[in-house]
Amino acid sequence: MSQHPGADGAAPVFADAADARRAIRAGRFRGHTSGLVPAHAQGNLMILPRAMAEDFHRFCQQNPKPCPILGVSRPGARALPTLGTDLDLATDVPGYRVYEGGALVAELPDLTGVWRDDLVTFVLGCSFSFEAGLIEAGIPLRHVALGRNVAMYRTSIATQPSGPFHGPLVVSMRPMRAADAIKAVQVTARLPAVHGAPIHLGDPSLIGIRDIARPDFGDPVPIEPDELPVFWACGVTPQAVAMAARLPLCITHAPGHMLITDLLNRDLPFL
Image 1 (cartoon, one colour):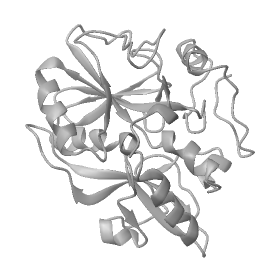
Image 2 (image 1 turned 120 degrees about the vertical axis):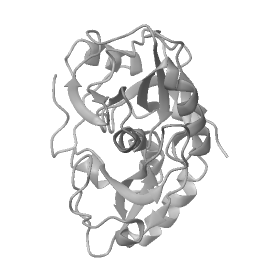
Image 3 (image 1 turned 60 degrees about the horizontal axis):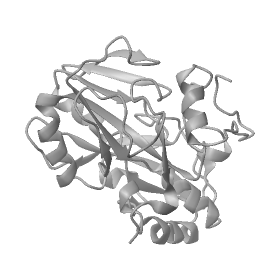
Image 4 (image 1 turned 90 degrees about the horizontal axis):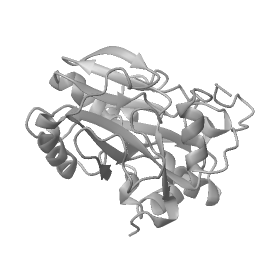
């Protein structure tokens, strides 16, 4: 098994989060992780040299909507026991990106060849984790039904800077009818650990998105005439920040290719 489900929406079946991680580690699954092991929280990654970790930690504290912290590793550690047993931060994500000087220099299936003893990993909450709650509430998600990655966009909204970290907020978009959008606000507002409530509904140009049909990350998702786009702060924001700030080195997940943790969505902090 190496690809994500197709247009019929049929997802691979894994026994649990650890089983999914083992499949990813072995190269048997390389697709995006939306809809996989839906009861479990997923996480974005930001991996940095120790010298930059304190400034990034402060950046997350100042920008909690796009960067809610689920866990932080010790320098050089590839395990993070608070988020899962048999979990390897260097191998258990379906795709990684390496940035140097703000430029994307490599896309890798694992980090075993580039891992360093001074690397600190931040795992940030992911909107894929609240999708199960939206579906349970009867809200259809088109990208899930189509087997696509969620659409993500850079915005004109600036993040709060910390040290070298600065840049635009990135958002994920899900098209919904108005009644479903209202319900989605109610569902996600109670889940701050996975981005919380939307930051914008409706006209994308008001947040600097020029062409809704051309996302900066992920896949385009059609919007029907009776729907409006609903935008959540997104954990891909650190990638936009890495590019804007021209960081000497950072490693992230490929957009939509998340770390599946042992944490259950129902056990995340709840307002």
